[in-house]
Length: 278
Image (cartoon, rainbow, N blue to C red):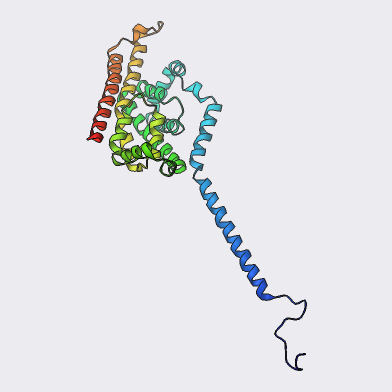
């Protein structure tokens, strides 16, 4: 038995152990912190997909609202006079609006960009129309590139190897030349050329510069085609439009320009491949 007047170090029966409570509380706090950190990482992982998801939503809305019906050749031809009159009356606003429209179409990969490029030629003239197209296309392509790189940029580096990895390394080493060749190759869809560099760790500055320079020839040729189409419609007057009306100097130059772009793309591709093999 304990001596009278002396206190035992053991807690009375039924008393709670504060040390045990503190340890349990610390473990609970640690678990909560780990859970919060995991949740934060998960949210951060999901956040990277927001830009590309936003572009997909815009594309879905544009398709649901029937935007393609207003961006068809028939629609442009039917409203040609009204559009030209509005452009002449509101030249600056029309130019800014065209840039934003084109940037939006390219950013969401809406399948009407080439037709709108042609329309720029008969609305603004081939030079101004081509310049507006280059600006709008560069802005839209850059938005799509950044969104794709943010969402999927690490996939190729982490999950591929072999020939694909070697190609990616070569692409990064000479990104400027590769991108210029891709931009000047008409056989490749514009959407593919816009997105592909996102998987090869290309810098934004290189992408913007090569996009701007690389699409100038094609944009000008398609705008010139639109200008020639406008002249062909003027020549046809009120009569029925026929294929013979397309035989104009402007249209001939435009088609020769398209053929020249195809040849230039092939020559540049061979040059780059020969350089890589050396």
